[in-house]
Each structure stands twice: as C-alpha cells, then as structure tokens.
Length: 109
Image: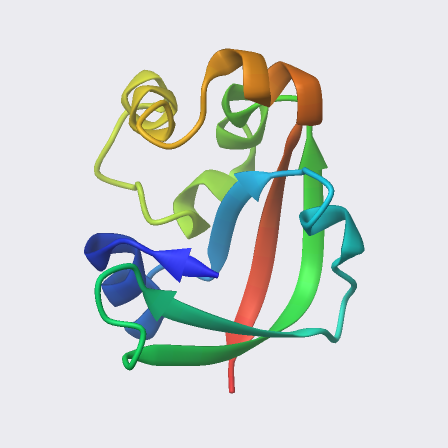
C-alpha cells in the first residue's frame, strides 16, 4: 500500500498503528495475519513491513473517529471534524458512502 510522507513516518514511529482506507474490493480481501508492505508514494524503495492484527469496520470516518480508536489513527492533534476533512484529501464522501471504511490495525514486523 502506498503512503504519503506523514502517515508513513507515523507508522514507522509506531505513533499510528491503524491505517485508514476505504473498505473497497481490495481491502475486503484482507484478513488478520496478512502481511502488508507500506511504501512511500514518491520512493517505493522506502518500505515498512507489517502484519494485520485487526480490522475495524465502520460506515464512515466520522463513526470510526468517534471511538477510542481515534488516538491510534495518527490524528491525535486534530478534532474529529479536522480528521474527517483531512481524509477528504484522499477519498470523497461518495466513495465513503459506497464502500464504508476500515481501520487496519497493524504490528510492524
């Protein structure tokens, strides 16, 4: 999975043990125990290997951010509204409504 610089660094530092994605066809194939390789968008030589330890399913990012998982998503410095707006850089509200969202809880290998 590709990541921008900030989320990549937060995952590497273990500040962000939950990666957020749409629960689209590709993510529906994930299972606990699967291996994921995260790579920087502009430099796929920089990678982080991780194992999926849990999948948290929600209908929206707002719903996910309204749980105790919020502090594990790398956006502790934001309000829920700011965190939702930040996700709009990556996904539209229409996509979110179509697929739902998944918090992929990982452990770095």
